Amino acid sequence: MTVRRGLYTLAGFLLLIGFVVLGLSVDERPPPVDVALADAFRGQHTRPAGQVAGLVTNVLGPVLPFALGAVLAVVAWRRRDLTVLCVKLAVVLLLCRMTSLIAKPAFYRERPREFPDLSYPSGHVVAVACTGFVAVLLCAWTRPHLTRLAITIAAAATVAGALCRIVLGVHWLTDTAGSVLAVGGVGLIVAAGLGLLPLPKDPA
Image (cartoon, rainbow, N blue to C red; front, side):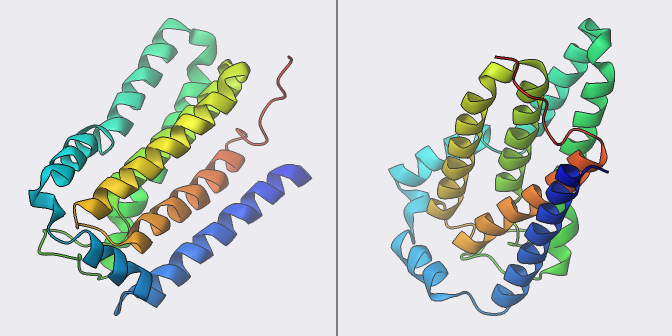
């Protein structure tokens, strides 16, 4: 393992530790920032802002990892030289997506309003963040000149997805922050372990 790969792995573990610490600290009582935002958007899920947010989260949500998985399958089929890369990326995508499914029962946190399922971390934000993470890796290995654009789009989509879940009153702010920490932690560790990090240098 190279020094740089080890640093990525260490960063991933630190993010996971942050995810666990945050989850434990907000498990029983939401912090003031959570309460303030929940109060500010209370009832918005029945109003125009909530309706727009609902439409956005229909796109920026669980459907995204499936869509990217389909893209990876097509790329692997059409470009046999990229099959191994696509399989590795699919593994990263799957393991990152599983963070919310595995972690929610561990953090028995209620939602800001009556809503099915547990709250920490946000599954929608995990879905957006893991899709963005893997999309950035895909660009870095196949279209390096698009990597910065991919990072910008991934970050903007994650923020938009998080904001929509808060507006809808189905997640606390810290739920969305925890989602990013979880995906970043698992993503860095798995990507480094599979040799996807450090990224190849842009020949340009």
